[in-house]
Image (cartoon, rainbow, N blue to C red; front, side, top):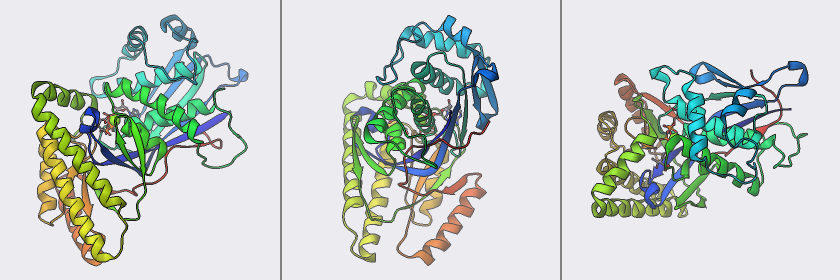
Length: 391
Ligand SMILES: Nc1ncnc2c1ncn2[C@@H]1O[C@H](COP(=O)(O)OP(=O)(O)OP(=O)(O)O)[C@@H](O)[C@H]1O
Ligand SMILES: C[C@@](O)(CCO)CC(=O)[O-]
Ligand SMILES: [Mg+2]
């Protein structure tokens, strides 16, 4: 049996980092996906290894099942239907397996993703031989939730071929799960995110699992319904960064300046709630849309100022802000910051004007060496398909 799962990336409209400290954040799925294929060998294949192919980075790994049995202390005692955190002992054992891969310095960032893979795979399928192939439309490590999309797609593929889910294999094409199965996928994906981020809030895996637009606070998800057209330009500064280090940096600042940072997080909470109120209020006419877009732009600018206070902006992010401001467009970082991707709110009320302005701003940003993309916002969450397998 073969299965393919896909999970979307995301943008955060307001509240990144502060959400780790209990503030509200608002996030939407985007129509760029990470795909995970899973296949178990047949007895004829005579294959006794767990194989992982990471197509985006052109790497392939293989662990003989004997090696997994020898190194991993808790194999076979976990249950796929009750997600659990990786123990210290298993974390160390997985780290030793990843160390043996001798990743070159430029690819060291992949170690956390490979560790998350080993944890999720062996928790759900033990030492069973398999081939897993990963490929993504998302830029990796750029603020669009590539780590969460990986964990969600992996969890979905693994669970769909486990005994804990009863699925109808006859269905053709992409299909989603029921609420309780989505919940299970989301919980396992969160455990994977923990291996990658250290201290994730859970917002990225939650929006990737459920799709659409969500409000998230202290692990609580609220679905947001909107009929406001929302267009964002996504600019990738192409500066690599690591979410785990940025999240840790904000926590260190919060430990040094407890009261000041608490006020910053509280201000972000108010901004996120105002964003939700604007997005959810009914749209009556073009004038109302213009007014809403202006308010949303202002809130994005305020959120960006507070992200700068948290120490997660970057010279390239400031450069994008300066360029878009010339065209009176509001910009904020999205995701963990420190480089990565930046969001610019595009006006929808005057499409002719918007078209010319957008073309000009994209040209100017790309002349600076940045890469612009437009992505559909608020689309589908994770899905699986039992047809097709790429190797
Ligand atoms: N397609 C993939 N192939 C291999 N590894 C991946 C893939 N997608 C994500 N990863 C893992 O996730 C890491 C990037 O996660 P990180 O959280 O730093 O960035 P992000 O999720 O893209 O951004 P943000 O968390 O700000 O939204 C990579 O270094 C790698 O370990
Ligand atoms: C920076 C952060 O707030 C969002 C990363 O997309 C981290 C998290 O919430 O897990
Ligand atoms: Mg991430």
